[in-house]
Image (cartoon, rainbow, N blue to C red; front, top):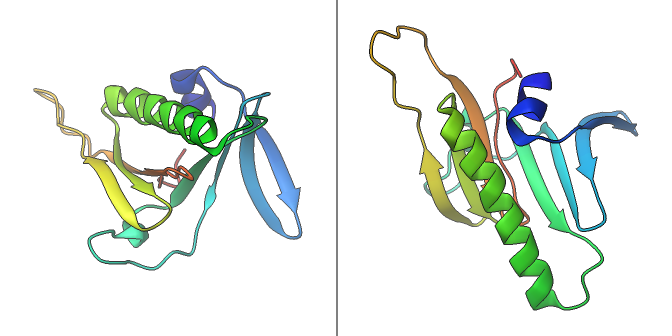
Length: 133
């Protein structure tokens, strides 16, 4: 989790509720949660290839249009930062129904290390991730 905190520039709190464990970042405008999921593959979205789900929700914003704008901008910034790290396979989706973007890291010259799976971001916004983080 510390690698992810460093990449994103935020600190997560571990949350335990009714037998479930996840990590959460929360400020006055957004909640970002990271946890495992049990989603089944659907259409061209292979959720089972990703171990973690990252979800973004906007808070304390009056209009639906502003909430969506704020949430989408934050989700895209998270996706961009993880993509720039070039370490994770990512899939950004909206409400578990539409794939918006996918990314697979490109190996660098002279590197023979296999890359980790990460996850997807949704506009509820979700990301899928590898268990080694």
